[in-house]
Length: 327
Image (tube, rainbow, N blue to C red; front, top):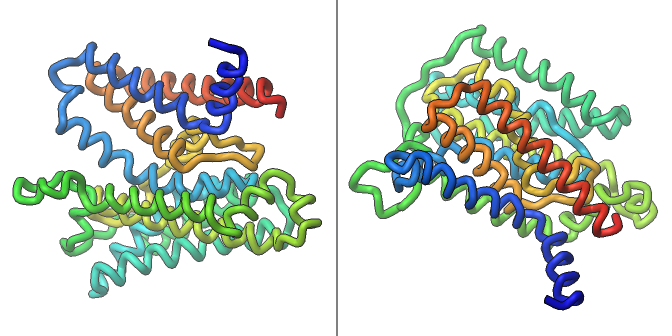
C-alpha cells in the first residue's frame, strides 16, 4: 500500500472516531459467541441487548452535545430518576400517559436550564455545578416521592422497551428503540447541518474565538444543557417503562455509563469533538460487555474492572490519535 493511501486511511480514521469502537463491538461479539455459543449469539439475546442500551443510548445523545461543547453533566442519573418519579406521580394523579411523559421531559429540561444558567452566570466549572445539581435533583426526586417508590397504573408507557409480543414481531424492535434511532438521526442532523450545531463545535473548539466571531456563547451553552437534560428526561421515560414505577433511587451512577459511552465512541472531554454514532456504539459496547460477562458467569466486580479498563484504553487511543493527527 502506498504512503498516500496509508495517510488517506489514517485521515479517514481520524475523522471517523466511531470505527475503532465498532470494530471492538464486532470482535467482542464474535468472542462471546464462541465462548457461550448456546445463549449469546441468539436473536433474542441481541434484541435484549438493544433494549437494554436504550436508556444509556438516549442519555448519551445529549451528553455528546455537552462534551462537544467542552462541558460535562454529572446530574444525568439524578435527572432520569426525577423524570421517573414525575411520570409516576402524574399518572397516579390521573394524568394521561402522554401528558405524564411530557411532564417528565419538561421537568428534566428545567434541570438543564438550571445547570446552564448557573454555569454561564456564575462562570463556575460545569463539573462543580452539575456535581451540586446531582445532589439537588436527587434530593428533589426523593422529596417528591417521600423517599419511596411511586406505583403507577398500567399504560402503554410500560411497553415502550418491553419484549414484543408474538403478534407484534413485525415491528422488529420495540417503540422505545425506534425512538432512540429517530432521536439519534435528529441530533446528528442538528449537529452537522444547522448553524446551531456549528456554533456548538465552535464553542467547544475555542470559546474565546467563538466569542470574537459573534457567537452568543452563553445562549449556546444554556440551550445545549436544556436539550441534553430533555433527552435525559426521555431516557427517564424509558427507565420508567423498564421499572413500571417511579423510583427516586434508580440510575445511581448512570452518568458514568453515559459519559463512558461518549468517550468510548470518540468524544473528547476537552471539547470540540464527538460523534452520535460513536456514542451509540459505545453504549452498545458497554451493554455487550455486561451481557457477555453475565452469560460467562463473571461477577459484577469483574465486569466493572473490564469496563474501566476499556474506558482507559479508549481515552489513551484517543490521545494517540490526536498526537498522530498533530492536534
